[in-house]
Amino acid sequence: MLSHRYQNAQQWIFLLLLVSSSGKFNFSCPCKNQADCSYPEKDLGASTEVFAFSNGTTKVEPWTWDSVTTLVVPAGFKLENEAQANTMCIAHSKGRKFSITAPMTLQRPLNASSEDAAKWVRTMCQQVRTWHADILTVDLLRYFAFNLDSTGADLMALAQILVQVKQEMGELTKIPFKMACIVPWKPPCAKDNESCDFAHLSNDACDYYVIHPDSFTDHDNIRCIARATIPMSKLLYGLSEYNVHHVPPAKMILGVPWHGYSYECGKLLKDVCYLPKKQGEETCDFSRRNPISYKSIVRDHESISNAHKAWFDAPHYSITRNAKQLQIWYEDKDSLTAKYKLVHEMGLKGVALMYGDDLATGLTAQDIISDALMWSFVAHEFLITSTKKPHAVHHDLHYADNMAGVAVGCLLLGTALGSILTCLALRSRIRRPKRFFMHQADDTTGFIDEDDRHL
Image 1 (cartoon, rainbow, N blue to C red):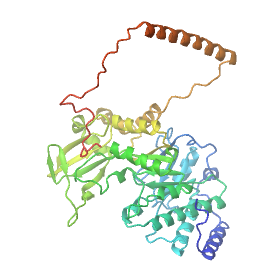
Image 2: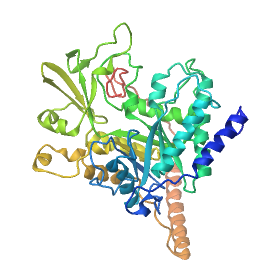
Image 3: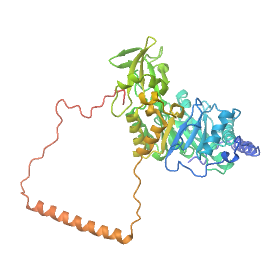
Image 4: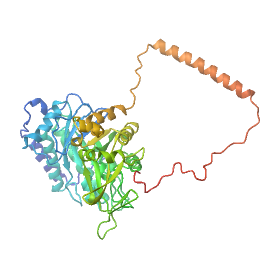
């Protein structure tokens, strides 16, 4: 697709020489057991991936790893920090893949042949090798958020730069290197809204597209009100748009927040939390929207018991604290189950926990009383396993038994069809007028309010 993408051959050859020369360096293993720097013997995410993102606030070793396939650490982690470097050792020792996050720091206008692009590609390759990472997770969310005026040429150059990283790593390492791209809830478009081909162009580079849950709260909101973190209508629309732009569901990973969000209301009327607009602008001011840990939600367990919710989406409750009116939106067992089921029913590659630090590793009396089990690794493992499609039945019966079963089935089907046809032949030929289904005048079944905070 992008095989003829290099416009400046001399600069590209110079880049190859620089990156190839870096292979002569000794990328030492920081682990006590040198084997922990190696790619896992078995890829547990071959069929379904479960990325567990860390924000660095807790130790990863006590996490429950049974249903996690990949650990993703933040870009701010340093190898010089022994505890941070040890996260890679822990993941590999447990047979899990390891990924380091890297932000896209290049600004528009982009040029895939520029020295800045070459430097960024070189830095990414060195990051992967020094961290002994199996996956590079490129955070594109901030780039798309702060480069709203990107042109179609910018998006093309961005895809080319990502492909360069993928190809370079393929030449520098023998492991099955993969790249995950953190993207918005729908395919990003150029400023003229005529070019939305980045998702299609980046298919050669991005093995996974991780939909970040924070991207659903964008500037498209007509009304500035607090709402669900992942509105179901947006999620379904975004997935369909990625599919239209030739991104298969098997590459999509849905980021799921295991924490809540607290909105500071400008005013709270009839359980609707209104947010102010930015000064001098017509866009909503989401600076009053802050993540809230499960521990803080547990503290409000009395409010949780009275939380309002729709059956298909996240609950919410309102409180007053320090003379401020707050509305908290979060996920519970039902809303998480709906999202996990959607992942499996639509054939997505998997889910991304954002963040593993938000999940409890142990249960106390207070946890049980306040039903904090909803935010535990135990709950996650239950949800991820119980919502999977049932395993296919193995065809291990003897061939003769199969044929006998088919013959009996055909006999029974023939008998049933014969009886039905006989009854129809004996029926009166008088035709009754058709009855058309009509809605009652006050029927609101299927009505969808575009301003619904859940949708």
